[in-house]
Length: 331
Image (cartoon, rainbow, N blue to C red; front, side, top):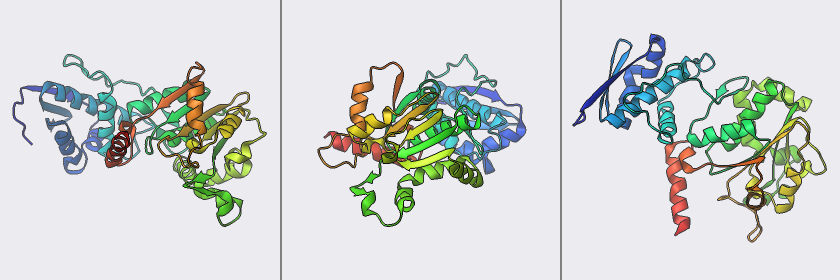
């Protein structure tokens, strides 16, 4: 691939040829796609990448290659699958930070500052917004994760809970959400209580099974180390030494939100997640999440993180859809 006005060239070298092969992909597919994405030329000679193009694009491509290589070098991550989307993830991260200038080479000994260890995989942030969310989950006892679908609010919260359970820092994980969706309530749904609840909590189950062996998930649910229940079941309880995740919190009422927030006990942490653009409460009823954001935003011990469409990790068209709806609603 050739681009006009290629007035700069730089090189970056990596020591592990096996990792380079993973980085490049079959038939150099990943590098070809990265060339198109960054509008640069990339040629591999041995274990050395030659990058040519405009200086700013060169530096960005160089940083992307170095960061992805670093993550592949980490023993915890080395055996996980690698796709071109990992390059796109690094681009999102770097665009939110200061780009390295031409005199500074990416460091190959960079430490991954934020990661959650689960039984099946290591979870790392994939956008700048997610990195801020990681920091909050690590440093605050009560965190609000606000933002559109696909930004990883619930997934990363589950990962943090599993990380803490695995390390023995908590005794149990409690996963809950209000049982209201698009006008339906539990009483109108068929089946026993478990059958009524499970569809609402399916995304949480999916996250658990992705991070833990199925037999371990079932064993911990049976023992009570992992508890999954509707928000109505939380009334009157106090959570000690637990990691509590309140999912789809935009559908809580004011009373429900105050109730769950006051359940926090000794040694516990709580994450409240929701998307204020998808409230399914009856028309005219204030979302407990929206109200709590206004009431609690000045308390220093509470961290509110707002994730944006740029943090969407699903198919890139999802971010475009969210932005289109936001623009339409602003008119």
